Length: 426
Ligand code: CA
Image 1 (spheres, rainbow, N blue to C red):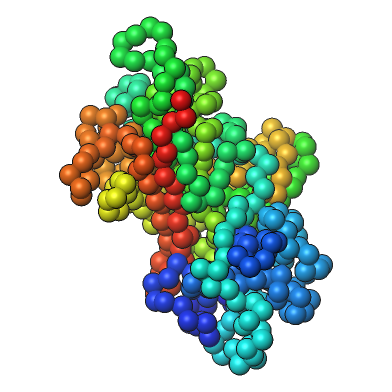
Image 2 (cartoon, rainbow, N blue to C red):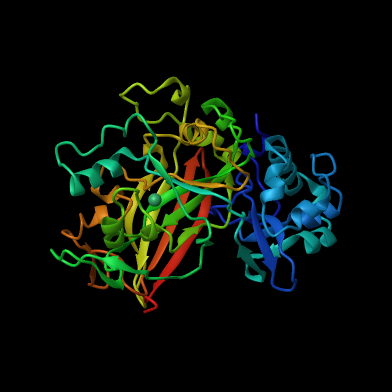
């Protein structure tokens, strides 16, 4: 039993009802107070950000396996994550205890509050982890089927390997950025109409991909495999992930080695890493895998998480339009199978590596996780509230991802992953 997940807990800090960050969440992130020069590791409760370095300095993490407060004074979570799952769990439990409404020790101590609690307006969020390696999977049956129907064969959309392998590719980590970072439309080679030769141009088919990404909580040795069972304890947590994609560049370049420049110009994550511990109450069984998988990919029990996901598109000077509602529970291949597959040949992983789920599409048209699918390759434009329509993203459009799990009156949210599309640099 994880005490911090008790749905009855309340905090002595004021948390608005419906907040993504009740006392049952306790995500981890890195922030910089506006009045200080150095970043700190923190957690979030409602609209407050909690300085874990300050809590450590006051001596409250002494028995939680934290060697020194310095681990919370880093620019990233990597050193904290490297301490391992028992420590993440202990620290989350301790934070829950400190901010519990029934714990009078702290809320009657003004000094404690002054040292430890920041208003959201007085801080800036930074990239939570240093991402060494990044893998992007392709694990939604509905997404792979839609793409197969559009670009291959309506009657036979899946390639023969798809139900045997969690298909993926190694991506680019340098351009993974935090929510609020705006991205220029990429330049690249595209084919216009029926032309044989490409032109160099701003992408005309810029898209988002609705994904969640998991962050590895373990460093393994070269040659070592991580089983699906071990994978459960080797994942630190999840963030929202917008894997921006230029479909026209992709279409021309992807044969035969897969996506390259069409997906490396910017991918945006939400700043708070929500732990698998916090998501434990929202576990559900995944879709039935109707082709038997090889033994190393077998997984028993609830493998998926019921996480509602939404995409909003906001034109410049316009309102937010919700254009997609999907759910992480639809994923055909789960994270534990993805990590087992990643390492089965002996590939080593590091703490802080990031693994994109692949676009998360559901069974209905409004649950498709990309513009490519929502507008069906541009043939069904999406109507917006200002009267305009979109086949793909236009300059100055803002794309906002939101996500949360909800059960027994408790909502565990991810906040936002937001980015604005800026004009190409020509
Ligand atoms: Ca992707």
